[in-house]
Image 1: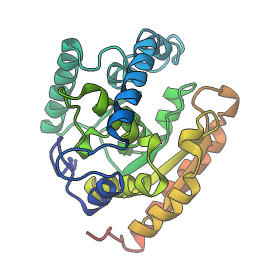
Image 2: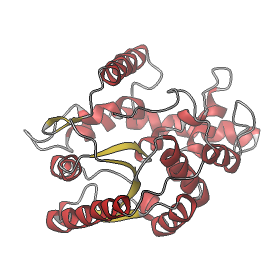
Image 3: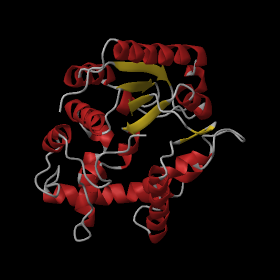
Image 4: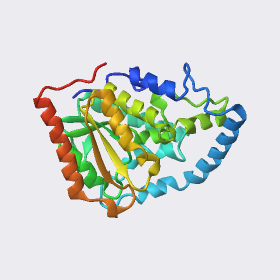
Amino acid sequence: MRTRPSSFTGVSSAGSAELAARAGKSGPGLPGFLGPAGRVAAGAEMGVVLGWMSGRVLGQYDLLFAEGDAPQDAVYYVGPIFSAFRGTPEGVEYYKALREEIEARVTRGEGPETPSGLLSEQKYRLVVEGTPNWTHFREFWKMFSDEGAVMVASTYTKVGGTYDFGFRHDPDDPLGTMADYCGGCYTNLNLPSRAAMLEAYIREYQADGFIIHSVKSCNSFSAGQLSILREVERRTGLPGGFIESDLVDPRYFSAANLKNRIESYLQMLDARRKGGRVDVPA
């Protein structure tokens, strides 16, 4: 099993440097996407919105899984930092425990947990762009895990912030850096910055390819995804896969169509390997 080549706290690839430059980052901190007054006003407004959401978001996640479906604690990996537990002692302890668990599994050489148990054989390393399919989460997940495909990085988790690219909240400027945080969230980045992030993850995690999951109910993600696909293919020399369903509307979920597209994409990766693998240049 290959593990992440660099630390949890930093990314040093050229792609991430470009991303940081495009996002307006200079040195160790973000100078801000807005002027001083605008940053305070935007931060205060977002604080009100987050306060309103905090009592609702975790309950909404509870509704995403049918009773007896996929493990219901899976979404809580992202749930706490999206809502009421951001910056709380309980949230800190939760993520400390989660990190220790993940590091212990890496040390033991264990693969990720799947609906069928630990993944024992890793055949494909993929970066995924877009949201999960929540209405059929287990079935959607198994389409990849049954083929030995591992999602080594995703853009969906960056809706909660791009901390691995260096952003940090400043306790001396809480409202201003909250505004900076919102401006730097993945779906608020422009398309070149999003393509640069995908490129950075593909290089850092030594991915074999990338999948774009386009959904109908979140235009913040789906707008421009075909342009991102072509740009990331151009930058990396790797083929991308494109699949479609939805994150909340089950009518857009076609298991047969998704499975066919996923299998066809993985077969294409196999064909490239047999013809001689082309590594992504550093």
